[in-house]
Picture 1 (cartoon, helix red, strand yellow):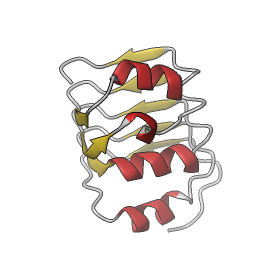
Picture 2 (picture 1 turned 180 degrees about the vertical axis):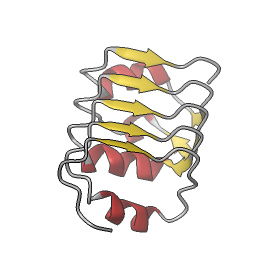
Picture 3 (picture 1 turned 45 degrees about the vertical axis):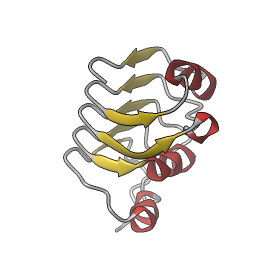
Picture 4 (picture 1 turned 135 degrees about the vertical axis):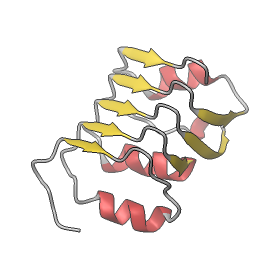
Length: 118
């Protein structure tokens, strides 16, 4: 995949991410990404952690109707330092800790959070 240094918006809705290593390598092509849509997609928590480190400027993440595989534990949630908007409506995610506390600690810039029917 080629490099897209000016791309700031990427829609990957309805995608099943099965190979985290390959996907992570391909995502490095989008160095200035600010808006990422993963609506109705299936991914492992480790890919979400990679996304947080690959895109430090990410401001908007939508995972509407998605599925996050793997168990989420306190410190395992990705730290999105610049994220302002997070939509996880209808998203299936396994939790064994206080999710809202995790969100508040890992996303200091968050201004909008939607968790309807999650």
